[in-house]
Image 1: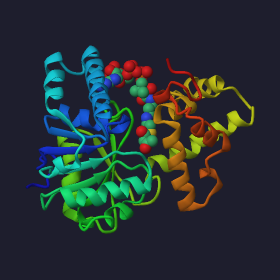
Image 2: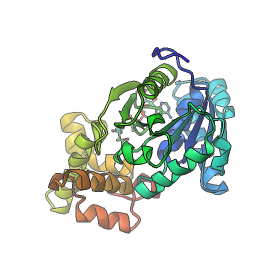
Image 3: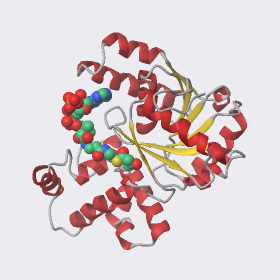
Length: 292
Ligand code: CAA
């Protein structure tokens, strides 16, 4: 094992959850030449996850980010399973299930039982749940760390690395070497507090846009055009909320509000009603905008 950034000792990666983030994480790991096993809850969800990765690889090949042969080789390195027991030999597992604390702690308790390698790193892609709670769901909190990617994972270069108070130095160094050395992503180090760096800044902005829409001050199109055309953001806040998923935005806002008790983090009623209605953004075809 080595702890220099260019070198890393991780070859076998497990990803729990093949949704938006999990499939993106699996894709970048497979593109980096690693052996990737993705766990999903059932065979249909597993098949959908594979299609997500395949579609994204084809898009990347179309845009000349990699050759058709490289895309094919990456796909060949990806396997799907519905049994977390298959993760016994993984050097690193990245959990990317729904942003719900009880679901994530249960995954970590299971990983603790099934992952056999004594030095395996158990990581979470959580955006807002304290790593401490995930670490203490296991018997090895020194090996638990946050590795938080950004959507779309193959496109955005940032990863937030989030050690908890109990994370070991070696785990932090190995995770950093993996993210920057194997995946070529840029790392920022964040403290284990809800929202870390990016979401603590981004979510209040997205919620402010929802409140602006809710108050009737401007249309969704005008709010988004305001920020894309007036501030050169790649997408407006409501389109971005649709991309992240309104359920995820609401879940992160709730975690932030619970942690800091400040009104700017409270999810506005319109956001909560849209989640209850199943209008979740791109993944359901409807959110603040319609997505064909
Ligand atoms: N693989 C590799 N590259 C890809 C790709 C793929 N599957 N799909 C697209 N790309 C590349 C394109 O080739 C293009 O690169 P170049 O500029 O070098 O040509 C670039 O990505 C942009 O792609 P497009 O031109 O097709 O698309 P676009 O210009 O409409 O951009 C977008 C789409 C990348 C989503 C852009 O709008 C964007 O970056 N939006 C902001 C997204 C953002 O803020 N995400 C953070 C969300 S917060 C989060 O994720 C954390 C959380 O916890 C909630």
